[in-house]
Structure formats: C-alpha cells, structure tokens
Image 1 (cartoon, rainbow, N blue to C red):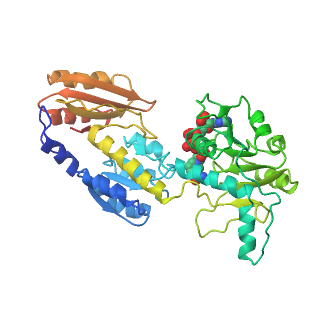
Image 2: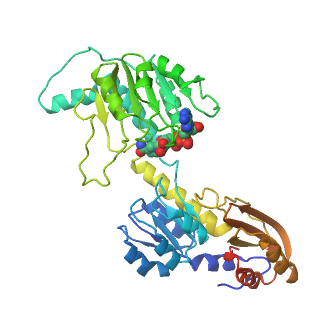
Length: 417
Ligand code: NAI
C-alpha cells in the first residue's frame, strides 16, 4: 500500500487506485472498460463466463470483479478470495451471486436495476399498437403467402384507455409515452404516486380493469403480485381489451389467459415473461399461448437493447468508481448503503465489521490513542455487519487502518484517500 499523509496528495490517490485490478467477464459493454481505465484502474477483459474452477485460478490477481448473469459466484469462490473488494453484476438480477456470503466478507455487490427502463417502456408502446392492428398475425400470414387486407377489428390507439398496474420506473415511463400518443392513462399502485401529465391514479385494481382498453403490468415479483391477473381479473376487464405483461412471469395465470382469449373476452395479449422460461437460447420454449390469434410472444427481451447494455456498463462502472474512490456503497444490494461527499483536507478510512456491541468503542479508542482527529464519522448497519466511514486528520492513516483491521470483529479496513 502507498504511504499515508495528513492531507492526501494526488499521487497518493493515484497510487491507491492504480494498485487495483479489475476483471470484466462475459463481454461486458466496452464503455465500462473505457470509463474505468480513464479513472486509472487496470482493467482486464474475459469474453466468456468463467467456471468456478477458472475463477479460483484467476481471481487472486484481481480485487474487483464484473460479471453478467451467467457467472456464478459461490461461497467457495468468495471464501477463497477474501481480498475481493467489490463485485458488479452488469445486469439486473443478482441471484447468481451468493449475496449473503459476499456481505459476510464485506463485499458489496452492485447491479444496474433501472438502466433498461426505457427499453421496456418502448416495447410496451410497440406492443399496444401491434395488438390494436393485429400486426403479429398479419406479418405471419404475409410471410406464409397470405394477403389478409381488412380493417375489421383494427383500431388506432388514440383516445383509448391504458391501465398501468405498478407506477414505478417502467410504469411511469410508459405513462408519459402513451399520453404523448393521445391515450388516456390511468394507473394503480399500492404506494401513493405522483401522477405524471394527465394520468389518473385509481383506488383499486378492479376500477382500473373495468375502464382499460389495454392493461399493462409493471409490478415486481412478490407474494401479493403472484397470480395477480387470473380468471376473476380477466373477466373484470372490458370485452375486447388487451393484456401486456413484461414484468414477471408469475403475475399472470397463463391458463386463465388462454381461456379468456379462446372465449374472445380478451382480444389479444403480448407476453414477454413466463412462469417457466428456457435457461438458454438452445432450450426449446413451450407455452399454452402458442398458436392463438393476436398473441405476441417474446423471449424476455423487454430490457434487451444495445442502449440498455451501454447504460448498464456506465451505471455499474460508476458504482465501482464511487465505492473505490470515496467509499460510497449507495445502490449495493447486500450491504448497508452509505453515500458521503468527499471531505477536503482529510483522509477517509473505511471499516466493515461484524455488528456486535462494543466495536465502535474499540475503533474510536484506537483513533483517540493515536491522537488523530475525527472530522466525520458515519455508520450504517444491518443485523450482521456495520459499515463505518471515517474522515480523519492523521499523519499515519495507513498505520491506523492496520490497527483497526487487526480487531477481531473487523472484516475489512481500507484507506480510500
Ligand atoms: P419499480 O420497483 O420501479 O416499480 C414497481 C412498482 O410496482 C412500484 O411503484 C410498486 O409500488 C408497485 N407495486 C408493487 N406491488 C404492487 C401491487 N401488489 N399492486 C400494485 N402495484 C404494486 O420496478 P420497475 O423497474 O418499474 O420494474 C417493474 C417490473 O418490470 C419488475 O417486475 C421487473 O422485474 C420487470 N422488468 C422486466 C424486464 C423485461 O425484460 N421484461 C426488464 C426490466 C424490468
């Protein structure tokens, strides 16, 4: 580690950063490497998803790891690589990482939950128009030599009512886009939300269902949203209405939707997510919805665009930069979230410890014994660990970090500047 000073010099900061090596796997978008290299980190790339054995061999050289959804980070990998500072999932989901053990070893895990919001919203808009004009069926027929030129059952979306269930990041984007095309927007959310534009919040799901020409679902997967749209809800919808689901596969009861489509109560649907999805592009996909008219089926591509991949690359690289440079853990999915501005003229010490009584007293005891001045101290805890950020005036900040690091309950201690 580099030498410590009372007021960190630029060269001291650069020395800390240039000692850190980052491995980005699974063809993570090039923008991530560009951004992190510009910041002075050494970045290596791996095109594929490394196996557990490969990770065991290569990880000792790296302090920071970037993965996408295919690389499994197991307890074994984490226990053998306790030097890892952070892991970034350059995707939305984080269940490929053993988050509990990562936290146990003081490793915050970052992801990019909202980088693909706009991509999903745009797909929903396209699907609304496609369902209104039965584009899926006309396209298939034309490819097969059919010529079905007819206005019957084809409608403009202008003036129709769109019901959005879940008015969060995606739902509210859909709201803005739909309104600009002349739709009337209503929404239902369990949390009180500020309506955007002229959108109107509805008090109950049933009210929304009864008024909507299109119902689009943008809720998370929770016990409450499981089977949220079943026979009862479908029958509560207007005859001839449409259902769009690009949220989670568990939200709609597919068999009930099939029945409602066959009974022509529901005029069409666009489904991007399914209760069971193939594990890879090589596995065959089967659904009872296949072959039904005006049914658009897509393989969970709502958020899959090049723009979203770029945004994900930038978002996680920025989380790395903020954690490594200033100790900000904001956005980490398994770790107390702390976000503090840089304090000029001080050094910053980070400490992750087991959350047991008396730890803070021990740390402060070391600091006062060394005659160091604490300029700011911020502690955030969860039931298992505490994350302490300290801004100190000290001539020997590195020595201080070493002493604190030796405490039996310290998991990780690091000087960031
Ligand atoms: P978000 O967390 O920003 O919004 C979800 C909203 O649903 C929140 O406002 C919440 O209060 C509301 N909500 C929760 N439970 C509810 C309930 N029982 N009834 C009504 N409202 C409820 O989430 P975001 O980013 O908008 O994502 C929405 C969904 O889209 C998630 O399920 C996510 O997994 C999925 N998604 C799908 C993608 C795809 O490729 N198809 C890509 C990205 C996200």
